[in-house]
Length: 321
Image (spheres, rainbow, N blue to C red):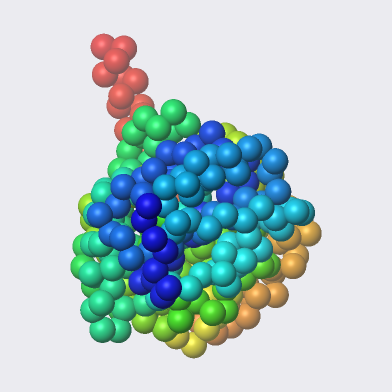
């Protein structure tokens, strides 16, 4: 039996809800790592789908695994924060019960990379897989190597994208994560947390897909997208981060223009709640500068549409001839 170290270097946290059909595969991917100095915490969020039987089978041969069943549903972010509070490791690897550590040296490579002074986190590309575990595509969102925290934050704001990736992609220092995940975010809690970490240190990105992120219709993120929660949170988060003093003017301008496009598509109540923040951001840029940028942005969009229209017409003519 593999024994639990008293003060592990890595805490692998697996908060799960109704993921028992994937949990055995997820745990097996952690156990087969060539890294031994870790604890594994599985926290089932009152799903009552038999997760305990899966985990107990692993516990009989590996004492590094600790299992908890919440008597009442906490919710996604609260369960993540519960796991963080229970962790004893120097660093954190947070993954869903349906995710995989694809490479057997994922933890050892990310631990070694994180030893570089000044880093807050390490992240890698990921293999997207479907419900059956079949590969969909590889997503690599940053150029490999070191990115300062400020540059990584600005790039995420300029592209309006979670470039760090899902939690399974990252390994980060527990001492920098004492604040936990912001409970006011249900969908973009990971992206908000990356912004928080990147104010405290830098990012090292590994272009190899060391992990797999599973996409399936029943996962919580898919449900949030369908109900429109994600769009409102997306605008709120970027307005929040772009208004901070550490944000560059280019990133602030990109968010202001993107928000200008997005607000009309939100539910009226959400748009009204966010309008004041959007106006404050525009005033930080200067109203004249913003409207010049907005006109240029609009003209570029019109030019792109005109170019696409011309290409379609040419394509139809070539097909008919």
